[in-house]
Image 1 (cartoon, one colour):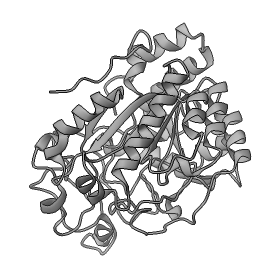
Image 2 (spheres, helix red, strand yellow):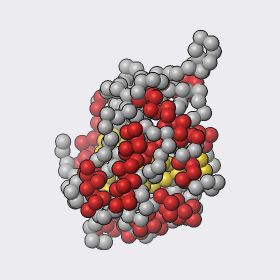
Image 3 (spheres, one colour):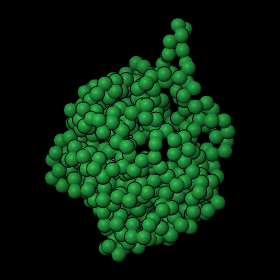
Image 4 (cartoon, one colour):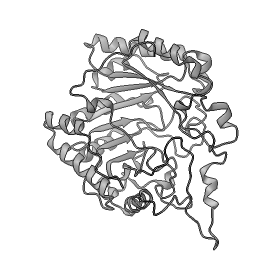
Length: 391
């Protein structure tokens, strides 16, 4: 496991300054339990990823939703379910991401959900394609107390943007972004902090500087250029992976062309499922534990609970809030198995088990997909500088 607890002094200072002592104690306990690798977790998760909807109007080819895999029925989260979840987790939560497999703005009660989370002192963030913004919604989002609005715009022109955001309208997104910024200014210029997220592919990396200049002209607070997740299929590397290695999540020389579910057939000499070590990522291959099963939780639009934001299929969920409360789910057999496996994996005593029915045991991205609290938690206050054009 980790050589020492991953406790962020900035987080502790901010919680002390806000006098959020219950959240502080839970945060410290959760990090200590993750460091120790305990199978049973007394602390509650301090990070929540929640899906207001699990459907979307775009057809992004690498997204399970956009590609039409339909691994879950289309659902809008009910407000009553969200209220019950906040009553249980809100007092100890630090942050909530309102997005995962769907477009959050398609839930008409999203501003109400955000406002409720803020009553519990939870930092809130949504990530949206922003192709849909009904009249008045920009003002509602600003008025909800939303802390961070991430807008996914993978290009600086319709041609490049639409190659991945299939069905998206670049001009409409920019116009909607201007509406949000105008609503923020009309409300006094406070929140939310607005971030332009640009997934870097081979077809759009030439527009990075143009996008940076557009972001500065619009007045967004930040623009981020991100290495995307790619599916393991023939031809993907040559067509989609950026040439600039800093935007490659994977090692181009080791990028596999078979999907992970085909690795389930790996067998030992006796014909039994065997451990599989998968090396596909760029950079150092040193093993790190995943903190999700001790510190974060993912709740889908229908109330099912996944161990992290990367679990697509319902068959690998760890529980269902319509049947059990979060506390019982948090330490059920699925979670305890996951924690034990991650401890073994990080210590080098085991590899991925692709044939396992437990999502964490079959995962080949342990330690690669951890969430991170936004940079504001490291600052003495919440003031941020505006994005500037140029390098």
